[in-house]
Image (tube, rainbow over all chains, first blue to last red; front, side, top):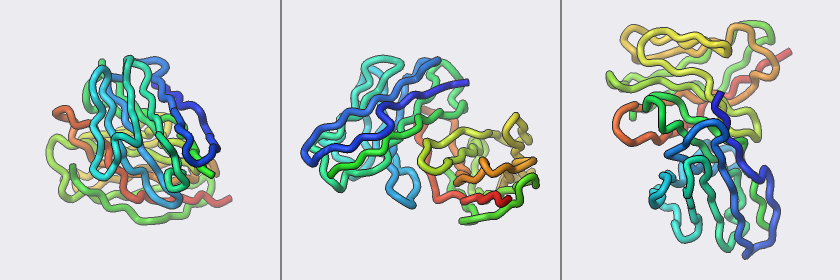
Length: 118
Length: 112
């Protein structure tokens, strides 16, 4: 079945560091990828929608200059958390949908990245 | 997209069927019902989806009422590994808006 790979699975770094998270679709072409953030004991919150070859669409309240998204190919999207601070510590999850299939086909999720900023 | 209502938590004995309800009384004709689950510290896992007919796959069955205002996800023989938060999401399949909106879901605890 459809597989989405997310890397790294865990990052611990100092405040002020920029962190890049990769999301890859391994066996399908993902024209659209999504980035979510999940704080402890809360549900997933959509941060942005990433479209291959165009600018990402950010949800209200998400700073586009802080969370840089690049979707340069049909199998890779990256999220860069710039100048990360402790309040950015969270569980970041990506998902992807197969652009060659019907619009009702489900999205598939990566295993998430646990980001801890010291 | 229609809003869904799920109980916050449920318990089930190992080996028994787990029946997880979801209300979506404002669902419209072209909206699908999707079920995902999230095991602790992992990304969500797709389970099943349907429009109006009942669906079954290797993981679960999805029963949708005739008026489509509610549905039930059935795990026929729950195991300890099925302990997770289960999310019911209603999504319009048309247009270019593919966003999923996650509610709080149901925490299913399978007990030995």
